[in-house]
Length: 236
Ligand SMILES: [Mg+2]
Image 1 (cartoon, helix red, strand yellow):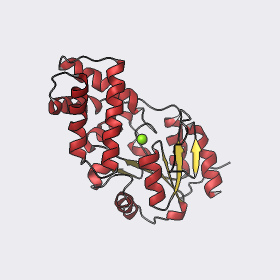
Image 2 (cartoon, helix red, strand yellow):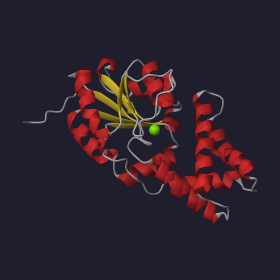
Image 3 (cartoon, protein in one colour):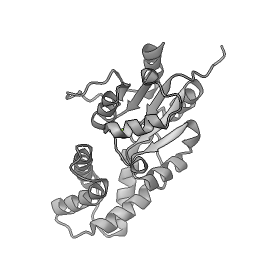
């Protein structure tokens, strides 16, 4: 059977915790930064940081904080909660440098990109800092799989803002919203954003978390290997 490239189907894919394992990268980058600065670090502190970090990015999604504020304020909040004297700016800078080096794949991500890049048009849609994401994408060697890469800092808008998606769609030649699907692990940024933008959405939910609502994806998968079947259901 010959694999003919379907030039009509457009797949937008999120990067962090969809293609690359951000949690592992974050843990290592934080650990090295804290070690360099002589700050305490263990799994509990990492988990606390993770909760604080998510809260701060949600404030960005809700338009309460700017990207720059999120990056520094999350460390200010962490140090305050830990009761340690730490320089949030310096920690942020070190953490970003560490994060931009190295990568870990989510299970099945390379196989997914390999298959999809041969069967449809792929675009990477990531909320992130350009410098960090450029480093991680280069480290993982995944740029050739994508027709274009849309990093929110560069776009000047973030998922789930409709403006972010408008800007992406404008840069996709022959864009057809009716043949477009977004795959991502975040209900609040990916799925909410995709739905607002009027395209199909697929929630990658590897830990099978219950969906708290009110954001419901069109499709849900627990393994990236299930996405092929979703595409078939969505577009035939
Ligand atoms: Mg993600």
